[in-house]
Length: 153
Ligand code: SF4
Image (cartoon, rainbow, N blue to C red; front, side):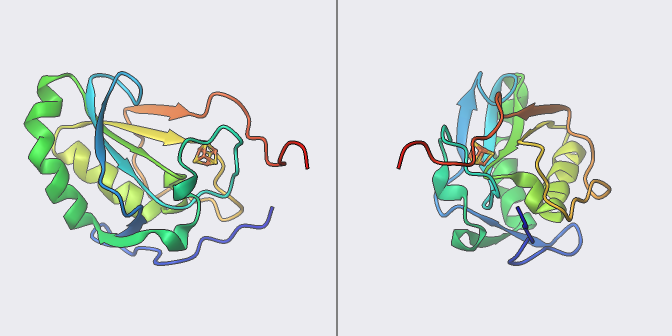
């Protein structure tokens, strides 16, 4: 599959990224340890049949948001998630399609002393970039291979 990241590819740690229009949410036990602030990001090149978030697939459907805005929201929950043994999980979509945005959020979360988790399929597309984000504390991935072709038809 030919995939070329589109949309606002953020430049620098205070860049911007695209996230779904809906609010971020809190979760417990499924997105990493403890209670977590879960940040969804837009865009995924895969089309897994079991996907729970197909609304995140198209990058251009996301709203543009700045890292500063995201961090201001996360900061509100910092004490709560740390006290619960939790942290911040970035999921999608495929967070690594927006590596500078994802990297900047991870970096700043670490600076705030927050545990970080990255929920990724591991598929980066041909323009993979692995140099610009810090290694998350915890890394999840989809539990089975994607199934790109529809069943039936
Ligand atoms: S990799 Fe994740 S977000 Fe992308 S289609 Fe598969 S389950 Fe959905």
